[in-house]
Length: 78
Image 1 (cartoon, rainbow, N blue to C red):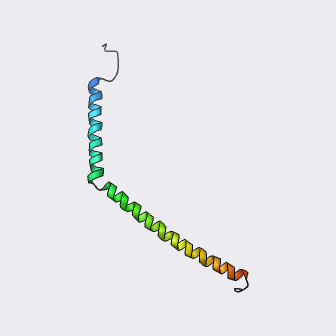
Image 2 (cartoon, helix red, strand yellow):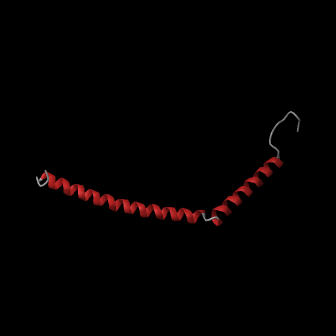
Image 3 (spheres, rainbow, N blue to C red):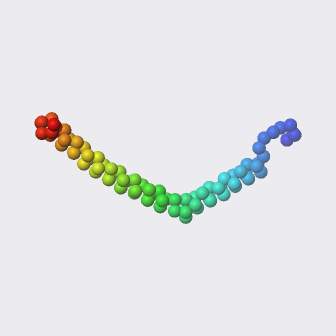
């Protein structure tokens, strides 16, 4: 190979791959052992509970407004 040619060497490529494998291993280990999936599941459950509660509240408000509008349109409320 001539000195004027530039490019990536096999050693640099192997070192890069090894570093990426190490980073992937550490990331996966943290995700599994660090409780990341448990925290995500807990957050999803909290969101579902909040969404259900909000839907119930909105239903009650909607029924109350419909009831008031019915009475207002029939002249019961002035």
